[in-house]
Length: 329
Length: 227
Image (cartoon, rainbow over all chains, first blue to last red; front, top):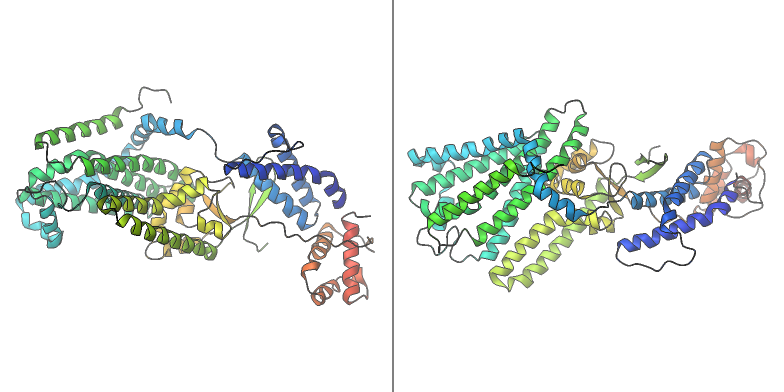
């Protein structure tokens, strides 16, 4: 069949399909246009799309002019985008993930989560203990100005814990989100360097937190410090560990790709890793909220705050140990 | 072909051609996004600065969302492109050519932090130059590509002329070359068209200049089947 005949015969079909695409792409932008009488009904669209695909294949095979091949390629591409685009009820899937998917995923990756926890809590606990006996060691780790600042933040005379008197709760909330979630994201992303970046961030954050906690406790400001951190510690520390585990998942795919090519293994690992980061980001959000609005309060006795902290640790650990076990997948 | 085209196979058994975007347009898109972010944050700083601590909190929140989540949100819900990519006619797609979804969009935007290292996207650029599809590390992990959105039709049509059968049988590739040439004549200078038209001796004989061009256009009209 000659090109001109081909074009005359099928041109109207292409134009109808194109009109449908125009209308539908507008619809996606919440700007519906009224379809006219001879418009392509939605039910006919898959068939019309397959016809366009067939015509594209024919036009290429018969070496029709580039103009018509390009036009058909563009039509098929637009149809492909619309027909294979993202669909589905995101709300239900988000709830499902929250209730069952996230704890299941963390359990499925438990080897990495435990490794990340050791890398983070190991130096933290070690330093916390060591600084009680060898307080001067802290000066190898942190500059004196930072220590002075911490000392000011946790001064027992403060009206609120963990912040200078001039700071505002909402301002601190914004800052905690901006800063803590960023640290979480960096811990995750740097894992692509064969896991080394995640290991670095986990260990260095463990050292930093352990040194601060050890120093503050040793100088005798323990009560305000621990009643400040106990509330949000569960959410925040576990979220860092999970971010690190997600980063190790990326790096692990490059170090030991198994039966796949390194590139394919990386793509496969990115899926669960990003899902871990959804959960970790949510935990950072809750932690920032607690840290800004509950942790600084001095109206409650330290024992109440320790109690709340212990309960939250119980909730977090219980969530990851038992969440999503009873339900069918 | 020397083009940086990527062909994707669809379930319908055909191949669609996508044109990959290289480092320069993507860097420009990033600059546009960066300036836009700077402008918005500058404006917010002025407005929210008047609100004291509350405004400061909102400012940090806005900063966080604009830096990490906004690009991913745009790529999922705004036709696969951030404002900068829109400006440069770029779009993010999965490797199989489907529109990008949340997991991939988030993965490529979080890994931006690594691509940026050690300074100004050195790792990202190195990664882009080391694979065939200009993928930075975030694209490699997320399984995404950045391509040009298709332009509007070039609008070149083969000029109408009385059809003329070619004096010798032509192969498909030769026919295609004639059609390609005829389609482009409106965009060429007359001299260049004539120079090209005088190459196939078997078709134009001793004709030269405008006459040779017209002869090929007439043959092209015959080849597409005009009567």
